[in-house]
Image 1: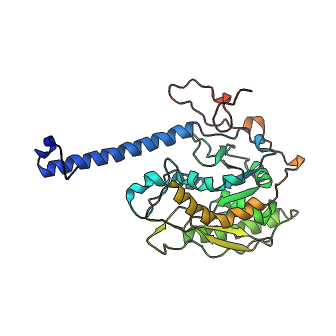
Image 2: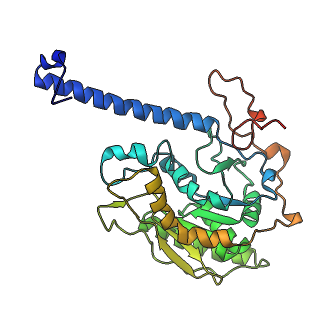
Image 3: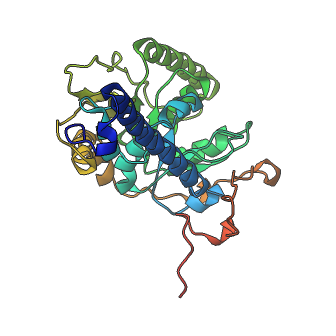
Length: 328
């Protein structure tokens, strides 16, 4: 177009033509960005909600635990990969960072999480269930005990530290996966808080069978080793052997010069495989009859749900994935 302009454009000054071309390019990118935000917003309206939580009984699921503070970052699109800025359109179209990461684990079962109390719509990625602000520990403990695996985004918050010590008490080491995306200072604060909380709970709850406190390594977050490395919000996994000895699995994605969604998915899968394969090979975890989830009826919050504008479809008439059940 620059080399062979139309007669009308040829009459314009070169600077004017450059401004027009730039406006067209920026306008197209702006339309794409607005369309992506609209897509994410619409998907949040149809995101599945685990309600009531008793519906997880008998199902194989992974429990995703994290401090609510990371939700804001993970609700954004994945960061730009090294290379052409326009490649994002082909790499992870319409996905948030949480969706992109959680999709790697869905082969092991549903991935569920506790949603932030009071949020207007569930975020995309793990399926949300909702608990009251108080007295949530008992239910989360039951969810940990019934989960095929526990994915925990580490941070020094008191809720996450309690969940970590509860996982030490109630689940086997092979089923716990720590996800590290925080800074070195935050990871050190998490380790210190975990040691303190573990010491307190082993004294006040001395009748319980406690696993030994794992000796967590130094923060595995490493600086970028190459200009081709894609700096994702997640930087490493930590898994445990049968004796609670930790093993670090760096999460380093090297961006290829020419790539699309399939090539990106293959590269990411190769990084997740050392964590996912042992988890998938674990036997199905039975849920003992006395381990049911229960909450007082008045404490069960209603899930956030607001119909799309102009939609008269009843939400309760849809299945778990947001689709209308097939007729027999």
